[in-house]
Length: 273
Image 1: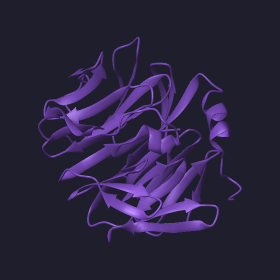
Image 2: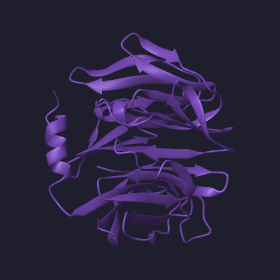
Image 3: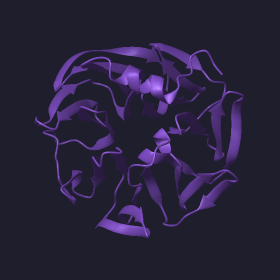
């Protein structure tokens, strides 16, 4: 096991140890770290110069897909994992998964990278799910299985991400948002480009009318106070975080409205550990 690898129990202790949080934004010049306390946004800085293509978080760690390699942020240090250029990154049962331009998908564990399979045009990874141009695939013990839909932009699988049993898998597709139950069930119609959810049921998605949140069993508008497009959403135990294509960072607790901070850098995603 790598010396920077955390068990899930250690990750939960790490994640709960402070009221302050560092949120990571993948932006045009690199990874930007933003200091947050509750709904107050503090300082921000370019934490690591690179060309990020995707970013994902798990308790205690953040993974970044760049045009050179996959990076793992642990104890505020950036570790190269030796994957090579990556286009998408996520966590599967608390382990980093990544994909490259050829569609190769692999999972990083004690023995290094182990290939899972190949899918044409991978767009996003989260938990056991893969979002691809021709639908959703599931990562299993024997490789990849196509599990429906078409033209999928993003997926969220909190149970598969954390290795637990709670949380409903969601898929953001060109035709709408879908929840996995007895097959894929329509949540709402219209092009949906991003989705993020947690085991406790909190969820956000970016649909045809902008940002929406899942509240009391329904998807309702939850607009940010900017005329910009949200490109990424993340959650922790205290708050929801969003980032726009123009580089505005947003934070909202369950007791506050959205607070914003202009970063001044084009962004592609946001993650929290």
